[in-house]
Every structure is written in C-alpha cells, then in structure tokens.
Length: 383
View: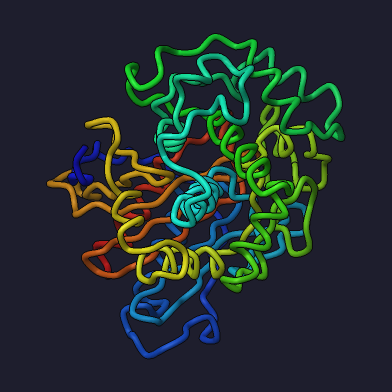
C-alpha cells in the first residue's frame, strides 16, 4: 500500500450556456483573507453555471479558519428565485467519508477490526466469508457495481417513489446480483452496495439504526446542524432538476423515498456548503473525527493506482489550462437525481472546497462531474 500520489486526468469542460449570475454577500465572508473575496472567486462560480448548464451553483471555501460562501444562478426556475449559498442540497456519496469515519471510530474503540469478515454480520451475502471491512471501505471487495444507472433497477424504483426500502431489503436484492470478482483480488470497483453493507455492520454492532448512529456520533458532536440523513425533502432544500424529454423536472418536490432509502448509508445525505466545509476541516486538520494515525490510513491506497483509500478518493484538480496537474486533494463526489456535489481538501494550502449544482441533466444529456472538477482547478489556482 502506498500513500496517494498526485496523478489525474485532464478535466474536461462542458459547453457554455448563459444564466443569471449571483453575488456573494459580504456577510458570507468570515475573516480577513482578501483572497476569499467575491472579486476573485465569484467569476468562477458564474462560469460553473455557464459550463454545467445547471440552473445554479453553490461554492464554499475555507482556509486557516476563514470561510466564504458563494452562489450563482437560480434556485427555482419558474419564478427565477436566486440560489442562496446557505441552501441545503442532496449530497449523495458525500456521505461515504462519514460512513467510513463511523467504521474507523469503532475500529479505534476496538469494537471492530479492519480485517473483520462481513460474515460476522451478513453471512448470507455472496463471498461474505472472504470480504473484510477494509475491502468494503476501499471498494476492493468485488461487490456488485449495479446501481441507479441500471434500467431494470430504475424501473423498480420508479414504480412507487414513496416506497421506503429497509437496508435488509436492499442487501437481499443485491445478494442476487453477480459479484464483479474475487474479494481482494479483483482490484478497485466502486460499489454503493459495499457502503450499504457497512451501514448495516454499524447498525448491528451498536444495536441502533445507521441514521441514528450518524446523528448521535457525528452530526451532533461536530455541530453539523444543517446536515441530515433523510428520505424526503428537508427544510431549506434547494430545488434540484433532472431533464426529462428536454423539460427540466423539479425532483425536489417529488417523493424520493425509493431512491434515497435505496442509497441509504451510501447516499442519503442532505447538507450545506458551510456544514461540509466544517466536516472537511475537522476530518483533515483535527483529531475530532478520527486520530491522525487513522486519518493516514484513510488516505492510503488499498489497491495500487486506484486513487481510493478508506472512504475518500484522490481528487483532481487538473490544470485548467491543460498543463501539468496540481498537487492533489482528498475528498469525495456526490450524485443523486437533481444534484451533483464535490467536497475536497488540499493539504498543501490547508484549503477546503465544497461545490454543488442543482441539476444532474441539462441540454439533453446527463451531467457528469467534469464542470465541478474544472471549477475546483480554478479555485485552487486562484487561492
């Protein structure tokens, strides 16, 4: 195993689409760091809206205890309501570092070991006797990669958007899906199911539902008051759009219980830029989440070249001008219907960045993370 080495592909840029721009209010800047002021960063947020095609974007940056929040574009399309940087967004897989932190806290407390086998808690799951918790955390367990992009699964979720899947139901369903290979031998294959399994391990070890453990052991102690595990819309939720037949569909007003309960410990997170900046700071710069020794373990590749440790990945940014890559950051991306997000920490600058857009489809195509990666590169270059 080796510590993450800086390497990444060049970030691709989307096309340009005009949209209404927002401005960072002076109250959104805490501290005296002039580099965090709107004249330097607001144009990057405006450009993110243009390139992604999303109605709006939120960006938060923090460095050395100083923080700034920015927004651009609109929240609600019909009325043209501007997007506020304080709005909640559905963060999808940004929950994975939190799930990993819960597992690693239990390891520190000697209630779990990274080489514990899944068979201790979910013996019926395929290859459970050969799958370790470390493999699940690092996506090297060979667990199925089947997920929401699977048409058959999409159809079953759309049949009843109000249906809530219990974790055991999701695990039972996933047990019938073909593994991608032998645990620990197949390499890194990103699997949401692996994190649902980890959520179930946490629940069974502590005898409480995953969401209750998350609230009591992370969200409350860390002061993340606007972050929650939820299967429906929450107060302050930004409108999120998925394009259907070239028409933007506001998914924030639709039931999402089937998708969010299916995502569970792998993706049912709601948060704000401010809360996520705080979590990144506490995780990467203090010992309040895990010890420095455990954090080093988190940032160490399990499968060489995978760019993934234990719940966190090596992120771009790549150079926005196509030249040599910048020093890498650590964090995660997140995607659920209607939203894309990204949270990164750059140790060389002690810089945290959170980015979110309120769409996952635009201009007749599904969006990927490329426009967020490009914005991340520009923020890094600017600061």
